[in-house]
Image 1 (cartoon, rainbow, N blue to C red):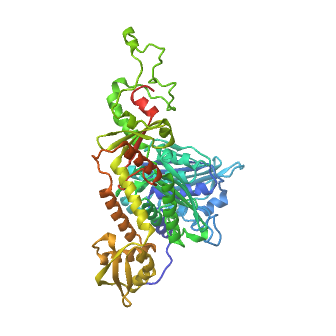
Image 2: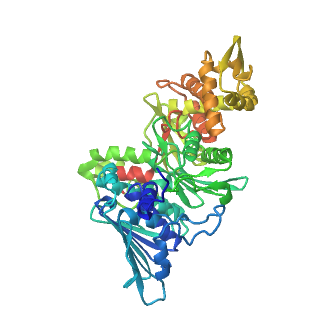
Length: 599
């Protein structure tokens, strides 16, 4: 069979299989074009989950008739010229419009600002209609109908209309977070209108629009830099977590990406603070020289390759951990909200309309102490009673000086209930502490510091374990031999294709050396990092902390309770235990008053 040139329409349909996988892929490409065109307002309308209709309208720079004629041809773009080493736009391949036009009914209407007439071009299943004048507002309108009508086999692989509409929503959310100065409006008969108002340079306000208002009060600001790579953004406190990774957003030079390296680094940073099966909420933005990252890995442009992946991973893990340590004992505010919600059904007969939150003041509080001059009760016989504190046999031991309440974020201990929960008074509320969970975290952090401050003890094997491995894996392992030895694992080369294990970390006890070394070899091959050994040591430390901490059911003296509170304030990450659960819940006085219908 002789070699022959494929028809242009078939070439475009083949390309469309990579660029346009589903309606959300088309939406992503069109929104990127609008952003590159300088739009400040982008409207997305859909029908049938984007399969029947996808319309993207922007107020960007627009196109003239000559540009329209070229825009629907493959590899025609205004964004790059001759080099892929300095890409500073979202799009650059020049494949989106011709790919969409080859499998759908496409029309592009555009008008440049200041010109009197707009122009329109159409493409139906790869057949191009001539450019013609058309009424249009400044900017561009791209309308896609009957997606994949020319390749009906692709329709069988699409999900339900609701699922496809949800995927488009997710694309818009990612773009909205990346570009807070742009107003996005998402509408259509298969969805309620969703608008993300422009926030200027206030990135956190846009994140709150997308991730919910709770994210603002439960997030930590990020700003770290290493060797010319800068990471900014916001990360949720560990107890503010979710059941999947859909609330983790990553951007590289403003481009939304779904990169495995970045997601793995986020997981590693939260490894000892978020329980298995839960995922932190994070928005990370990496800024680096475009020459140090390859965005031309896949036509969809969602995958990237870094020239130095170890640098990127180290920056993310180190920056996140530093931020979490900086916040110290901070815990999620959602715990208090959930606690308040649990109380409200019982108070329904006395429910009052919600009032705006305000700071608590003893002078304005409905529950303030009665004035000695005012009648205490309506009955005259009751006026003889004076306001006094309820007697308590241990009151003097639980009532520290007033300055102690105001001097510490977690306040001063007032009581212990059910032999497990410490109630502490703060300057503007109260804190309830789970004593076992809190002390478990403190012991764990102390063990980790002890392990990090000196070489790990090792146990020598009576007979060295010989492990056969490919030669390249042996080379990678020996390159990290010094790091392993510092953690108590002693290895050496045993011929060209084998590794001899002579010592293992004593803290691990009896360990499967073969499985451990093979896992380390796999990790180094993929990430150039060996984290499993450190993770195992951290796991042992967590287990020891759980068994060595204050148990539930033990009565504590006031001095012990206050000492625990002071240690929590001084220990990074003490807002959650080793399993990711909160160690304390804080209620403000304003919240307490609302619970009793007094606010």
